[in-house]
Image 1 (spheres, rainbow, N blue to C red):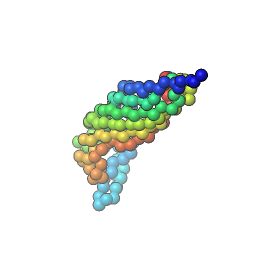
Image 2: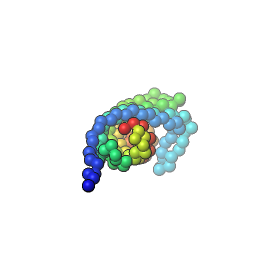
Image 3: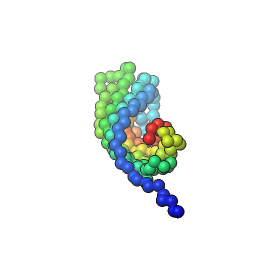
Image 4: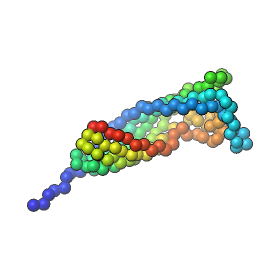
Length: 154
């Protein structure tokens, strides 16, 4: 008797995410291609709100390895503050952007999995208008990120 292979079905999904990144450093400027730190404490905070659609290839209850792709849009809040900032030096703004990601999920157990993925995010309109980001030619707040995730649930 021949056994029929388990059925594989792909599945689409919706997702949302909110995260926060906060980093402290100091103000700086660029002159003739050289960066000079000013010793003025600075804190930059990025808070993305992202919504997207994903697609899992060949997902079934018996699949242990499932590749996936996703894409979406986001609203990205950017805040930059310094203790001794002059009027107009602090930044508090929000802009929209888009993202694309792909990765693979490994099911370790029925309720536990791990995943690795890479995400590209593009957010223009926040950097490049002034300060060191303008001097350095930075115009995109986004970039590439690699992630490792532990999954609990199906």
